[in-house]
Amino acid sequence: MSDTLLLPDRRRPEPLWHQVEQAIRARIAQNLWPPGSQLPAEDKLCEMLGVSRITLRHAMRNLEASGVLRREHGRGTFVRNATLVAGARGLTSFTDEMALLGLSGGSRILDKACIPASPEAAAALAIEPGEPVARIRRLRLGDGLPIGVQDAHLRLDRAPGILEDELAGGSLYAHLRQRYGIVPFEATETYRVAAAATEEADLLGIPPGSPAFMVERITVDDRGPFEFTVSTMRGDRYEIRSTLRSTHP
Image (cartoon, rainbow, N blue to C red):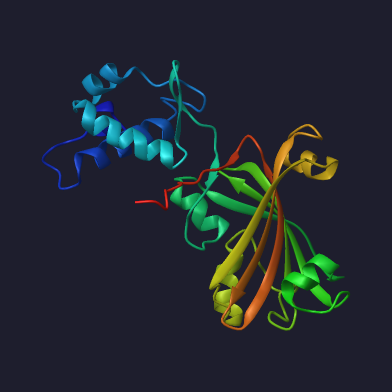
């Protein structure tokens, strides 16, 4: 793609700030601005893209909020490495979350097994401890790079053939919807910081003991809980961002 095709055009119907976002994303995708690189200064970007500071700042705020860029006070703006930003969002699959960030999501199935439910899994799934559940262990990828290791525990009475199904690397939620009529309605997530265990660290390509997010999710549909998931997410590629609002007028 030639550089001129990456420039915003006021004759196009899309808002100018949106065109600026796409122009910056395109440069990143083409590795003109690779992960970790610093973007040109604001005045240089305005000149390069032919837009005002207000338009540029609108686009840059959106790209920062979506995890594409990071701003360091006193230093400038940098292209992030592949990072999943968790915050206020709808109930989506990992695959959909990656797509929202402009990344290609993927999974590699590491293991599928029928195991007795641990006390934690049993409580989450509203079953008795020791009752059989399906455990699907997957390596979650963003643009081909490891982001997390995920153990999904599923009620076998809700998805009786899940261990024999061909899951490949797509969305588990999409498969559950199409094969078993399970449509996620609500999920509760709990985050805590921990040191990555040796097995997970090896899969994620980080030293054992590296900081990681441990994420537990309980997902329900209109019939109740059907999934309990425990994930270990790379601390350098996964972050949590929340917007706080005052309750006072």
